Image 1 (cartoon, one colour):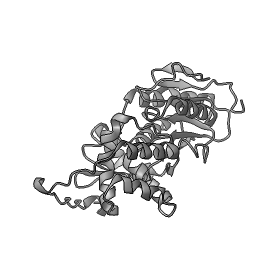
Image 2 (tube, rainbow, N blue to C red):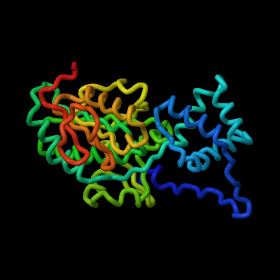
Image 3 (cartoon, rainbow, N blue to C red):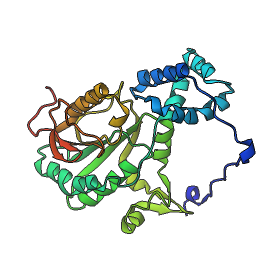
Image 4 (cartoon, one colour):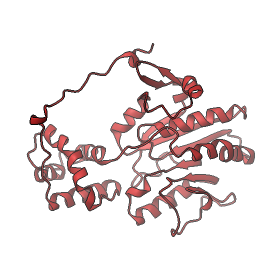
Length: 301
């Protein structure tokens, strides 16, 4: 049994209810200052009704720093000595990382049964490799789900391979994703035959097998500022359940950049609560939350 998997994680210390520490209060001025810092850093639009969530997420950080108030935390962030490093912790704290294996399963069926085979049939290139980008990979369930789909599909297309770029803005969540270890409850959506094929089993935990993880490259990418780093000639982009955190202007900018990153005929997958309706774009609708770049459209437009 893999030594990493066989270890039972220590139980966190439980504070008695009468000793539970209350969150720090946050006034509107501090909330607005923190919202602005987050927006400037990564264009995430934190709405007013998220104030309590921000308090809950950041209270632990204040205690760790020994700061008695959010006012002092804002001052700490504005100090040039701390700003760059602390912004990383701020973004890690406020970003939401909700994901599951094969979430919105029709997307994975479409990728395996329609999109990828179509790209392979149409390919007139010497490089027989599919390139997929998971643009908000969170704790890794999405890119590993793509890995399983493409491994299964490419058994019917010998000579082809694939590579997956998996990115997120949170350094902490990327480290977790690269580890590829999940509780039994997290892998429940994976069919048993595929679970046995692609995962090692430990004490109530599962680890993605090295040969399955080899095609996934994890990288920190800020969709606002360094979108084009290492990005080109993608056959598909999974940018799901992330646009909802941006304002409309930033959404339109990200979609336009996705269009340029895709090869002609490439696919864009959004979350089912997201749509390009009402947005000026050159993408063509294929399925709910699935769009395609025109086959004859050039990236140089």
